[in-house]
Image (cartoon, rainbow, N blue to C red; front, side, top):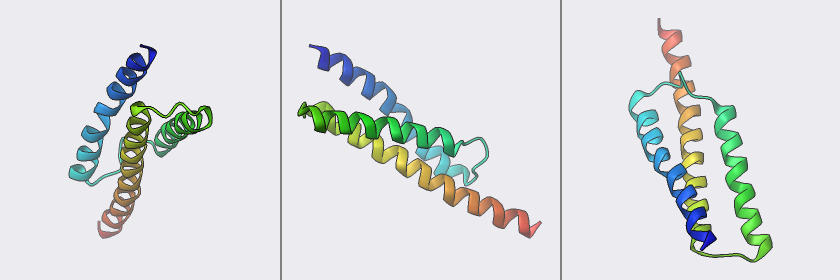
Length: 93
């Protein structure tokens, strides 16, 4: 039963990442994004994955941690792409 609550938590966090990724892709700017925040989230998901692996508690919830980690990592990569685009745009002005 506790896994249900963990799954709900991970799903609720996970819902926001596709929205954030889409916004990062469309806006093509790093303004308003914090790479430090994204790195903290990545560390958190990595810690959750490590705990699942070390405890041997590999349930279906594990895959939601992995999915969320991949989405946050994608958003961080988009941040760096967008920061580069911001620098290029600033040089053109």
